[in-house]
Image 1 (spheres, rainbow, N blue to C red):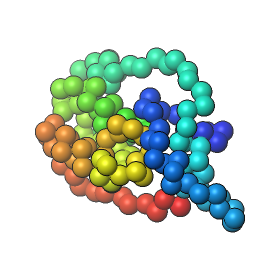
Image 2 (image 1 turned 90 degrees about the horizontal axis):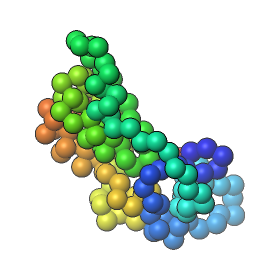
Image 3 (image 1 turned 135 degrees about the vertical axis):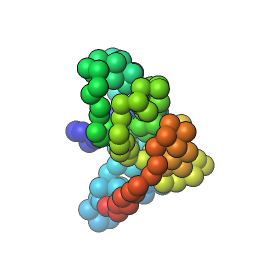
Length: 138
C-alpha cells in the first residue's frame, strides 16, 4: 500500500467497495484500505519471477531459514511457484493471509488464497503450523 493505493496481480474484490460507507469521523486505516484498494486505477507491466528461479540460484547446502511473503493475495501462489525446492531448502514460511471463507465479501482480492488454503497446501509440502498472529484490522 503506497501513495493511497494498493498493488496486486489480482483484481480487487468488487464487494469491498459496497462495504465502505463514508464516515463523518476521520477515516480509519481499514476504511482507507477498503476505499483505495477496491478499484483499479492504474495498470503496470512488471516482471514476475517464480520462486523456483530464485531458490535454484542458492549455493548447494544453503537453506532459507525464513521465507516471508506478502504478495497482496498471491502469497500461496508465490510459495507454490517454488515447486519441490520449497520443501528442500526452506525451513520456515510466513505468509500474510486473511482468515475468511472464500465467499466472504471482506476478502480484498478476487481469487486470493485464504488462511485455510495455505494451511492445507503447506501441509502437503511437509510444513506444520506453529504460530498464527492475529492482528486488529485497525
